[in-house]
Image 1 (cartoon, one colour):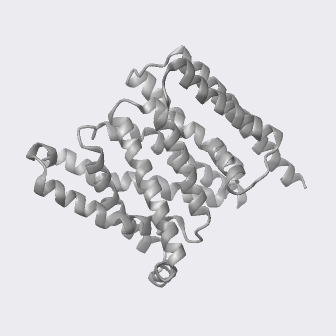
Image 2 (image 1 turned 60 degrees about the horizontal axis):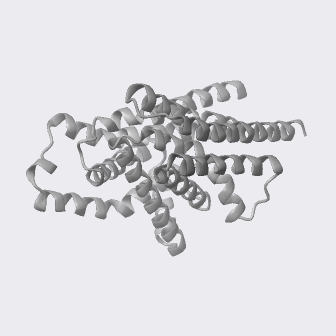
Image 3 (image 1 turned 180 degrees about the vertical axis):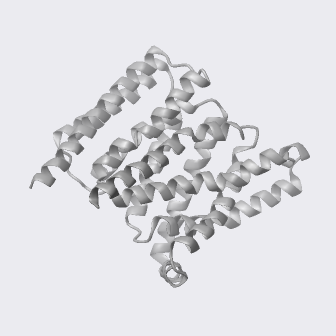
Length: 301
């Protein structure tokens, strides 16, 4: 039974991270749509699709109970508002990055993200880092600074994506409700802003900004599906697999995006990038091995 769970978990995890890795291809198809408009559609249709998922996956009374729990607890609601702002801004920067040929930096951001989680754990939660994990954070920091100094390029996209998603994860860790319900409430909180912005575009924007062909409209609507499906797969994987396995699988998505950026869209991958990524990949190898060995020791004990 455990083996079946692990096999299913790996399949779900692979599905989630492969879809996330291929998302830039989908977003490139919508690069002619303004990033804010795309974000508005993505939030609205994610909200709609999540309703179907919630009714399909759980009983109505349990769903209502979790909704009541959030909206009768001011602190919980404020935390979800904060996490919603973090997530939507992360989405916005990612959409903009893909549309403006910065997929390489976006991939870098998600390579850095696990190490940013470690750094936040140390700085915010006061967690003590072992020497190996501290070494991995230092190596990643050297890689980023090397890119800034040698390349004359401040990787703001990568750093914002890594930091915002790490803060989002930290915030959601403190909110004890299901991942899908939590995401639905986040979309609900931001829904009025998204709707008002799209109404504003329809009333005040020029026709060429909002008049989309049927293919574009379909892709905008379907963005709700491509947003929520990998999340469902990921949550299913997370319930079945140890964190060490999830930690290794998570590098699939940025690896696919990196390959797409360099080989499909011909984004520049210079010597500076090679050295910087070398430091970061070295940090990830050390971090992953450390986590894997720690997990193995716990199993033995």
